[in-house]
Amino acid sequence: MDGNGAPRVYYTGMHGRYYVMVMDLLGPTLQRLLESKPNRHLSFDQVMIIGTKCVELLRNLHAKGYVHGDVKPENFLCSPSEGSTISDPSKGLYMIDLGLASKWRDNSRANGHISYGQRVDHFSGTVRYASVNAHLGRWLSRRDDLESLGYMLLYLFNGSLPWQGYCGDDKNMQVCETKGRLTIESMCRGAPEIMQYYIAYVKNLKFEDRPQYDYLLMLFDSVNGGMRKVRTLIEQRSAENTDKDSWEDDSRDKETTATAGQKRKRSNNEASAETASEPVAKKYKLVVPKRIKTHQWVIISTSARTGNSPNTQCYTSH
Image (cartoon, rainbow, N blue to C red; front, side, top):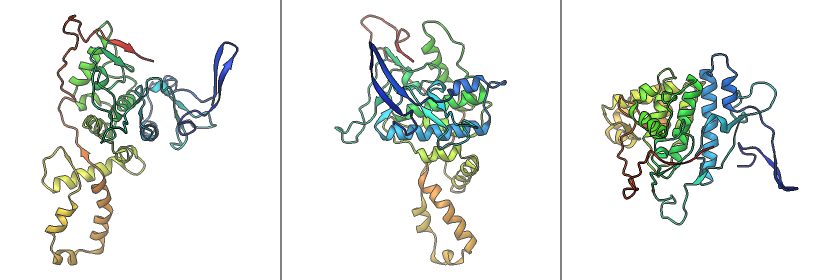
């Protein structure tokens, strides 16, 4: 990651009895940027730019076989360059703090992915932004970084999250319950509509799924009408009279049902429009948010002999 969305490291070593690391001096964190705003939230365009850059950064990290494990505003730094610190998505943001990073890739297994596991007595991350799986002690995979990113973007846009304010020894489980109890619509209240589609998609990912990063980038592409493209996908699906929650390309079915005569009658404009829409339909799986809870789960404690509750967890947090 050195130099590729992460601070460049120039030197590591010992100075007397101290360990020394010299790296790029960057700008403020996203948390500091948020706190500098009088109304304590960022604009729609700023959040979309940050979302785009963060997806790119996480895709690069995931490609190296690791998940970050602690996605939050404090771990993303703005560029120190003159002018706007986040207006350029190609170089405006840097990711730091891989202290809780873990491997998702395991080349010794046939599918190249680590096996599923869980320790209900252990939590790793930051409670405010952690995925539900992290709260429940499940091994982290790529989906969990993206879920945490969704919570972070909601926080940057609204200035707060619905589960802030809990305290006490069972704070972790209170936050976990709230994240699971809220509907996606309630969770994203006050945020751009596109965030409902983002949260719905990442919540639908399975443990070993490879995320469609290009689809997420399309959602955040407000300049080129990310939400408009999503609505086009919805209209296409409605026209096909399907009630599925998600869908994939069915262009081959449509090709076999269309007669040669129908094809000849198509105008050039119609053919061009279909050609333009086909790559979107072929490439992306659409998950439409519904008024349902984001998660349901059963917690089984592994500490039955001692009677310890999963509420008393071992925290590892930065």
